[in-house]
Structure formats: structure tokens, C-alpha cells
Length: 101
Image 1 (cartoon, helix red, strand yellow):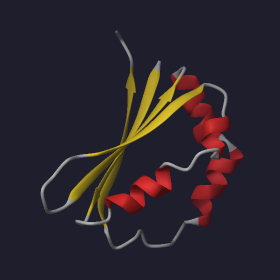
Image 2 (cartoon, one colour):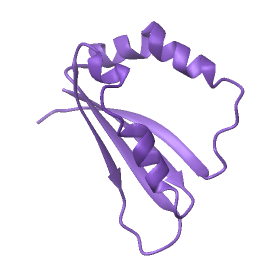
Image 3 (cartoon, helix red, strand yellow):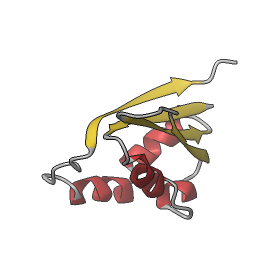
């Protein structure tokens, strides 16, 4: 098992936009071989900047890599090439984890 985890640090009040973007059902990623599940988490905070995690669960690292190389995935990124990220996104990162237990 394998997880891809996207971390988005956004300005206060904007986490709902990230949740909406990553919660769409029937997306291309959900149709890929080896895709298991996707969860969107928002860190609880009383005020201030917000953090959103997108956990994407795959059967294997190979399945995730196949998605990363998939023409539809690449086309989606190329469509946004050169566009500035939304002003409310402070920082974003991605990590991958292999499930050991």
C-alpha cells in the first residue's frame, strides 16, 4: 500500500475552496488502476492560516507512478503551466509514503 499526501497551507477562510477542488467524485484519478481512496482533511484551528491535507491511497507505488505519467494527468498540469497559483495558497508540498504495517 502507498499514500500520496498533498499539504496545502492557505490563508484563513480558504480551506473550503481546496476541499471542494479535491473532493470531486468521479475524477480521472479515481478511475485509475490501483486507486483505492482519497480523503481531504482540514486541520482544526480557531483562527489564522489553515492547513489542508489530501491523502490519496494507492495499491502500490507503481500504480501511483503510472498515474503521474498518465497523459491526462500530464495534460492537466500543462494546462496550468505558467499560471500563478491562487493568491490564497501560501505554500504547498507533496510527499509519498509506503505503508509498512
